Image (cartoon, rainbow, N blue to C red; front, side, top):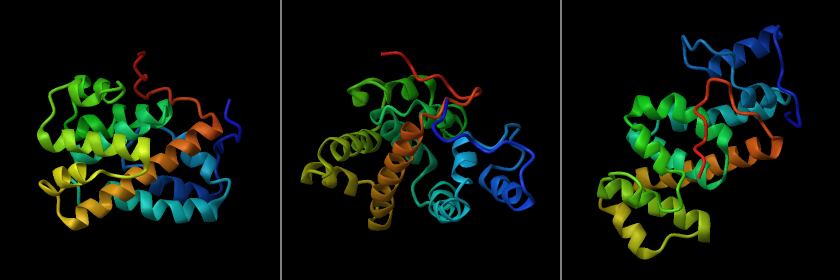
Length: 186
């Protein structure tokens, strides 16, 4: 059970509008529990929406690269909630296959699936940031071979953002969405 209960319908009109903005059009699910908890503090939710929506809908990274980063960050953060949401929806839409998604949950994701050099560099970058809060020069150089400066800045923010989302979901003890992909057993 979540430490802070998600809002339940019927929602006040302003909350209903805000929650519908957070969900992609035509999605057959209730708004995510994470969003419904955040709307217990609408001002905070509003501030968070701008960055989250910007990274997902208007980012400079290719969708598959974004989803590899999100899957690895949430896996390394042991955030089954957010990993499962993306693994069930956005990751497959971006082109990640089930083997690649499973590989993001293993200690050495870089060898767990067929990855391109660009994607291997992303996985190493997420792991270094997770383990040391820094990037080695060799990892930075590997990233520079595939990404422009604006994309590299976005990559660093994306890693930090999904670390924050993982802390939030884990700290709240959010239960996985019933339609989310189950986090693979190791």
